[in-house]
Image (cartoon, rainbow, N blue to C red; front, top):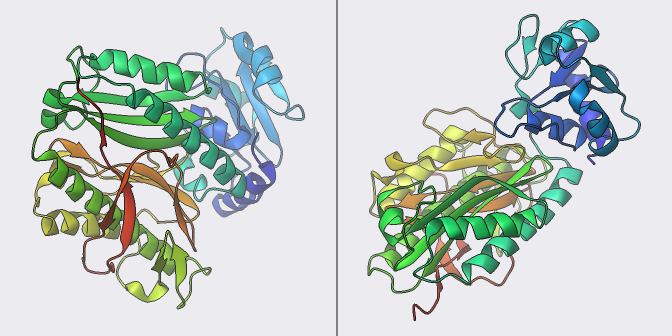
Length: 393
């Protein structure tokens, strides 16, 4: 379960700032963020079977057909769960009848203010960070174990099934699971698994979720790769390194823990004085776009989003031109640049004084790349995951 004391301080400030008496979360990631459990019954539904709320105290309102299980299995013993008839109206209506008002809700509903739940979830708390590290480590271990056993004749959907099973054994779900063999990975940026065989190489991209937290990673496996793959993968890795470097600069500018002295970051350093320009998601995007141009692929950024902040959503925000989302710490960041047929992606925990890859086992090969020299970002060395070479025989 989560450290509710950290949530309390943040929520008290939110209620006071918006002159509200309560705030409620019916989306699964909001419920998980507040109390650590799951309100999901129908995985295809945008809202769960219960709402988690805070009005100075933590409360849950749940549909009668799920209340007993949620009370027993999903929330702390000291949090009351109120059961409401499943056949009488909607969950937002049940909240409106039982909550102090005015109140905010994380879905659009009559009588409620909107709440930007993503902003409330940023940055991560110390407790979140500990659980995030564990999720990243286990997700990487599961994905890499499957990837090392692949063969050129494996159909994509069988690879996906094996990854889902490996992660499910660790109580981890897969909201995003992409598998592309040589033909489809070279033509599509988001190859959902099909019946094609892997062929010369494969790209596997996964977002793993547990307890509301999301960690993303990509691994590339090669058997008899095309001649261009090595250079394109290195280009994507350099762009990812630049995104990380730009994120570190933005955090360094906003965190008191980073001053004019240098702090070690994966063997390099972050300096608060690196730039007067990189402060938000739009600035990081600009650095990414400039990096594409510098590595000789100026238009590739247009084919796919570049990633962004990660935590209690696949992406809490995605970096876009002119975006103003704050770059906070400690926070997860999953950048995923692509260069036709190649992709580089991991989830990094960026704090004011350090950066660590949480989707790392230490058992997958890496390559050392240098971030691109773009405006506001000093060049630094980073280890990125490399394609692993398997026998095609």
